[in-house]
Length: 208
Image 1 (tube, helix red, strand yellow):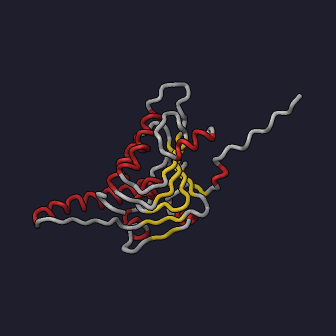
Image 2 (cartoon, rainbow, N blue to C red):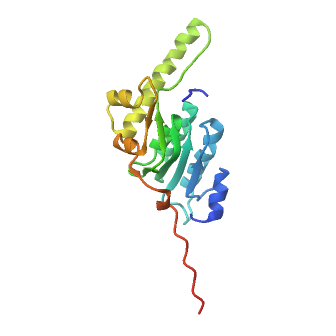
Image 3 (cartoon, rainbow, N blue to C red):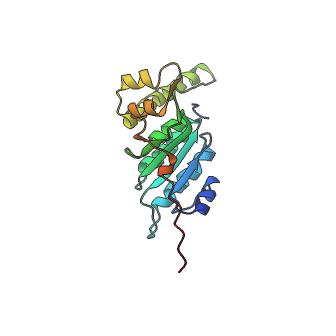
């Protein structure tokens, strides 16, 4: 974790390229967290919320497989997700780590799912600064603010106390979890196969 640094098959294919389109129900995030990668998601959420047509989605689904990245960019997306008037379902698969985990947890409570084989990594954030003494002293304020921001987010998303967050999710060493352990800690709300979200193939019409 670094600081500073369907409905129809055609729709699903287009989304894989992360081209922001309103009325799209699903989006895939399988990237490092950065300004460039979160922007399409922010546009996707804004576009859906400002849609006044009869096709305005009742919920949005964000599928995440991310090793993490920039904390500031992660919180930019998190704030957009929290401000969405359309509930956002999050599905974690593959690996959700670091800043990617923070984004996953920001899904609406009760709508955060992990697939059975998902790996979860939670850890302390990495920080560094260079400069003159007074510049480094000033930079420590952002260190303190980031620490408070992280703990507040974990507490809000999991319901854990600050002490348990520090011990179980922000310990000095990496915390690797499986889906069942993440469920017990309040990181997700259920464990489900992806088949739960893929509509069944339409039955062929009989010829008369």
